[in-house]
Image (tube, rainbow, N blue to C red):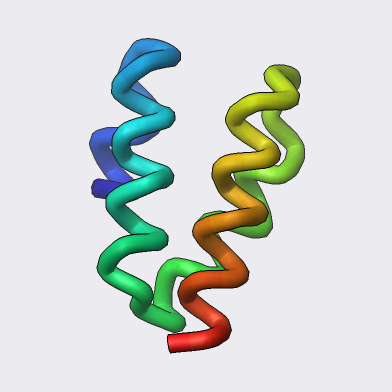
Length: 57
């Protein structure tokens, strides 16, 4: 999913970020931290939410 993120459109990026949160792997946290630099606020919010889910799982 992380590799697919780079070449995905906006809507697919949202889906990927939500999926990473649903999976809840702590290995995704570093990737999600990097997504916090995205220019789109919605992507940053979904990344932060997914990061919380990964931390708490």
